[in-house]
Length: 324
Image (cartoon, rainbow, N blue to C red; front, side):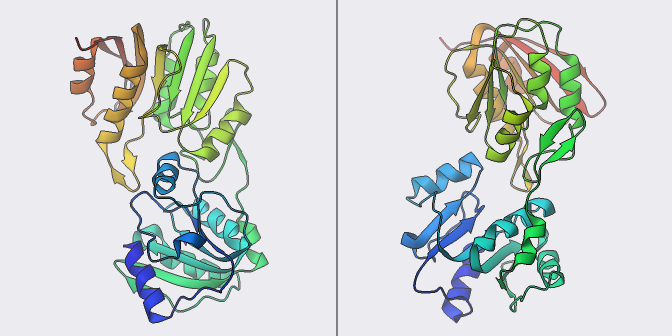
């Protein structure tokens, strides 16, 4: 969808690039086709590890300080995150903003006009729009700013549950026992809410925080100033444990982009199973409607519900079953 608008804009002459300078592409998603752009000039910038690895594998540069002839903003759905990306795009004189109607592209163009920025005529195609915007200092008001939330945690606009702890994580934290084993992992650690709860339990000597979103992990580093914590910018579904863990704690995501994807949570469960020691346990929370129990009983000898409410189930799964 994004490629169709880029190709049309370039072919029609609505979008042209200056002869010099790189092209900064902010937050494209894995699967986005950027082949309409001159690859040698493209710098992709994203803090989401799976997307980062996707474009790096295609040979795109993932770092660059400019100067930038143009910045292309791949609009996310979250308004605060979208505005923060627009502020980053101030590094270039010309900004191309591209997004689906469901991502709020019309609202973004309206907001840019309200800031007094020159906004070109939008090109509509494939249920979305692309428009050229002349960058200006007014965009600085949208720059991402740390926010302090309940529990004295720092968050940023791009992170999950940026306004405070989500209900599932709170239920999981409350269900954790008073004592945990020595080596623990927090898969999909976010900005560190569960990590703090884990480290408050007796017995914990090492905690691996694995998080795919770089800005969330940066917040976790601030929120968890504990020498027992080790921070890993990585896709939790493919992360290889440095040593087998005695316990894994997680609130796995179940959305890929804007679509619900139970397969993502299943991949988290398989990753936890791979990383656990033979006597280890998984502590996890998930929406009750998600089909995780059928997989859990094939991977663990003991599976039991240990907490939750009408919407969420907290599960402990112990003693991973190894294939013979």
